[in-house]
Length: 154
Image (cartoon, rainbow, N blue to C red):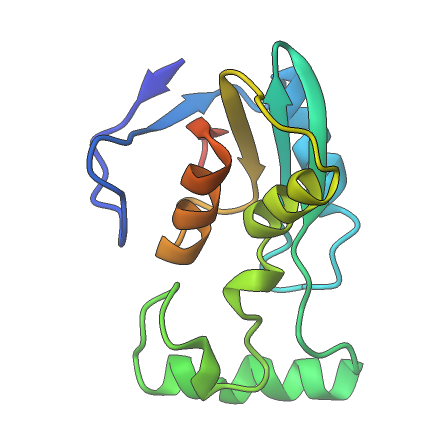
């Protein structure tokens, strides 16, 4: 595991993002989860691990699924046209998925819906993106996730 000196758009105080090889078994599972995504721009997958076992998984979802609308969104995303950074003001563009559709957020919701409490040393492995937005971090911290791992090549 390694850390990198990257200026992320958002990183909670006292938290770091750790990096593992793409062939890490949990990262492989996160990548498999990303392959289920209908977001063709940035498919992402997340798995939550406790005591060496995957206890939750999810992939991101695009807010639109019609291929013509997806192509239109690629050309005319309002957020991109206005230069809004990733992770902010999703509400401006109907084609951009909100944070509740992000893989890490959905993995935490899936975990919470299981109704199990008192997990220890939760970790989240995220494939397909290079950082986590504030609402996703807030949700992960609420669930007790201590570490977030990305791949070395993100």
